Amino acid sequence: MNVVVTGGAGFIGANLCRELASRPTVGRVVALDDLSTGSADNLAGTDVELIEGSILDRDLLEDVVAGADAVVHLAARPSVPRSLADPFASHEVNATGSVRVLEACRRSHTHVVAASSSSVYGSITDLPKHEGLPTRPLSPYAASKLATESYVLAYGSAFGLPALSFRFFNVYGPLQPAGHAYAAVVPAFIDAALRGQPLTVFGDGHQTRDFTYVGTVARVLADAVERKVTSARPVNLAFGTRVSVLELAHHLAKILELAVEIRHEPPRRGDVRDSQADDGLLRSLFAGLEPVPLEQGLAETVQWFRSVVTPA
Image (tube, rainbow, N blue to C red; front, top):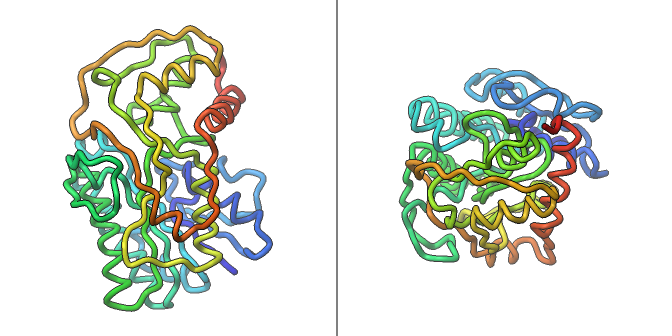
């Protein structure tokens, strides 16, 4: 089978492309990426075909999707703070771009698997978060990802498009970039620690997250493509763990065998206080799924960072 991965040169996309390329059932893997946040280096040493371009380019999308058996739609403008700085840009890529991808898939009736976000739950305080809860986004980014999943489900219902929308929860692992203002917490902490700098914690650090290793996410996405899994509801892609930001810092300090300094900054607008997934629906669709434990995933992530970051 032939698979297109939008955002395929990004953090999750490149890990997925590598997973797909390793599977005997998959023939051609195409990564479509404008390289605004991804990097061609993430696909080095693979047989993945990289096409540089934007999901906002309707003609390009038509050409790329035409020969595909499945599309995994990961291309997005990430980050809550980035969406606060430029809400329209987040909407254009995440909402309008998703519609363009879905239109291309509709014309060829191509199976589409798309990425939404746990941020759509927003101010809902119930834990663990299950897919039947209301959605109350706290940021333009969260609203744009809710639009993405809503369009995916609507195309499935209105046009019979085989579709599946996952809600990602705090994915981390190798290839995740650091060293910029919008870096996620795991790479930001590791990068700072290796450079001998303080770890910046926004707020009191007791906010909790459900961290999911990118290798596990890639396997689930690849399985969804191979088995043509669909769902009329969004599906949480996380496993019900709950770790505070301060606990994460202590885990990493132990793995790194480094003393780390914590520096607290004011809480950030748009950040969710607590996040934890109910994984019941996920496990009903992917029986026997065994996620990579946090300690193992963090150790593998640290090992990768040590190969690319020069210690202080």
